[in-house]
Length: 379
Image (tube, rainbow, N blue to C red; front, side, top):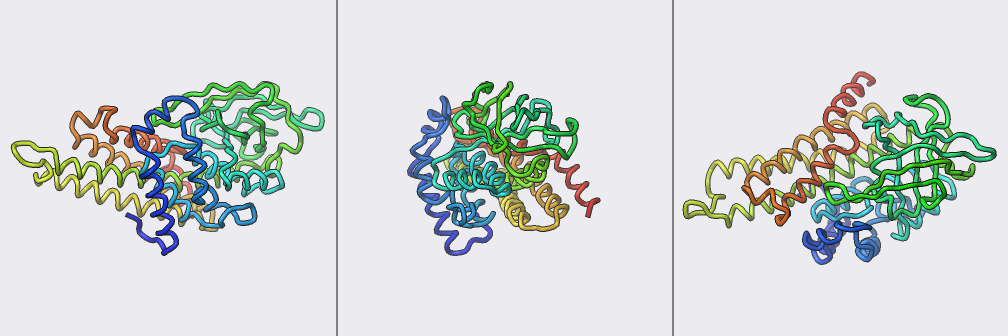
């Protein structure tokens, strides 16, 4: 239940709701995510036709020039429908980096993304990197007029279907230095790239990628050489805000589905939803969903904050809230469904997996607690 939307945003949200209601459901999703590519390309194209890809991208590059609140509308609809697709990886992650970096190559990619004609994956996480963006051991050494890429990246969302990769690599400094990280646009079919594709527990698809002597030209550099970390940090903040909206959509679905079940499941001759203790628990779930909605809205609005420390504090605060509330809603929804809540046949388990994965992505609650405290001290 959105806190604030103008008339245009309400119309857009209604269009998305109707689209997913007609085009997507759990039985269909179960079949789609079981095999590569893990999403339906025709649905992806139709979604682009609604303006979902272009909504938050800059007008100069074929987008509609919307803001983080418009992006949140799409992500909330994705969360409510449990739509599995490269939207987060292509539009939010890659879109953020391309928009910030600028340049003709970035502009061409953004225009194609806005039309739904290109998918771009971001390879930034490393096997031992945890949540630290500056922990980069992948190397891009100078090689004549260009670079030679060596290293490994982990859990690269939808890399198996990507038309291009954005790879973070170290061009100078040691493994944990903030400076010296450079972003590169890489052809996923280039010689020296080996990828292992797999399905994640929440129905997404990802890849572990090895780069061995991959040759890159100077024109492969995205943004400034050695200054890629600030772009990655801004990308992560956008991703947290977008994921918070997605989690909120999923949490509202869980609340509504559980409420409907409690009205029909009978025990001792009456619906279990009539028991006072169950009503109290559902009131807590409703409150948690409302608080999560507020946290998601706060995260989206925080992206406009000019002070980096204040922006970090607000985004991390929202992520901590989403992590706590998401766990509460998923656990209660499964528990109130009884043993059936753990089965693959019911939708609640699928939603619970996705919300759980969101709480662990881009930093868990403990990581963001430390980040929140550091931001306060830096203020």
